[in-house]
Every structure is written in structure tokens, then in C-alpha cells.
Image 1: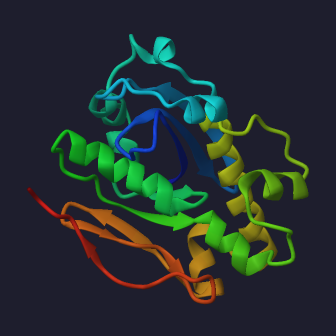
Image 2: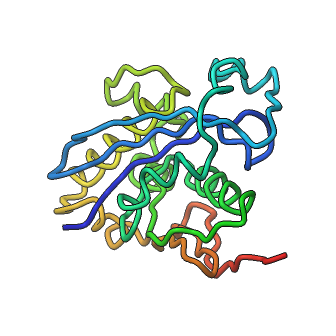
Image 3: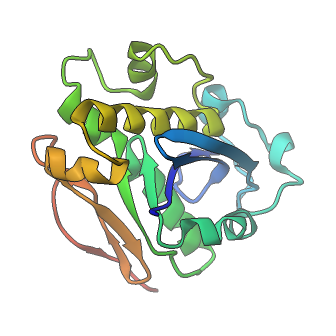
Length: 209
């Protein structure tokens, strides 16, 4: 059975390598079955006021928390061979890759899908495709920019889209909407794109120093 995990990161500042929180939501048999959240101490303890105003996480909250490698190692077995979901996956996947780059660690290997691109294709009548707007349209109440709750909502959106499309599983959504599945692997990554949403197909490789 394919492992499906929705993921969300919050960052301390404008740098992608400044993850300060990760949320994960596991999906099995068309339902969210487990949700986890971990705080992360960035390698550079620089928090911007703008980011704090969004997610409410400040240096005092993470000063005694583990750094990125230790936090991600806890979920290494979960990520291996999984399909990850993220709303605006370009951001969350760049945070994940930047975190591994920061510590000169190899990337895990998994496939990923972007629920933002799914929504743009399937529910194009919404006023916008922000996570909060989509959640409101589905009657889902949540604390936006709390990583665990964002991840859970992301998972629920994918479940609903699969249901609307008549797909047996979330991993079948791409063939219904012309989506190219993203991949992260030790050599780099391939972006998730979707015809008609401005995505650009192509292969990207990790640049080693």
C-alpha cells in the first residue's frame, strides 16, 4: 500500500533553510489517521518579525528543540518511498531540500503532489486557491499557519478531490488532471507540474559545492 503523507513547513525568516516547524498528516483508506507536529531550531537563530506575525513561533519557542537533521530523521522511514502532499509544494519541497543542503545531507527519495495545482484544475471557480479559502469552501475550521493543522487540511483537500474525480486513491489524481508527479531523490528533484496551471515541466538536479 502506498504511503501518503501531507506535509507543511513554517520558516523563521525569508531563507528556505530556516524551517522552525514541520507538520505531517498520514492518510490511509481515504482518511487522515495520524497528525504530528515538531518544532525545529534553525541553524541560524534569526527570526523575522514578519514570519513571527504569521505563525507565532519565536526564538524562545525553539531554543531547546532539535535541529533539522534530528527532526527529519524521526520520520525517515515514513518518507522512504512515500507520496508526499503539500499545498504549494514548490515552497515546502524547497524548504525540505534547503534543510538537507544546509547540513550537507543526502535527500530522501519520494514522490510528491501539489494540492494547490490540483485545486486550480478541479475547483477553478473559487475566488482564489489559498489553503484558507479552500478549507472554508469545504467547511473545514483550522488554525492557519500551524503546521500540523495546515498539513491535515492539505490531506483532507486531496481526499475530497480524489472523491470528486472518482479516483480510487489520491495517487490516481494526476492521471485525471494531467499532472506530472514530482520526485525528490539523491541526485536532485523533478518538479510537480500540471498542464494549464502555469507549471513548467523539466528535470532539476542538485548542485553540489
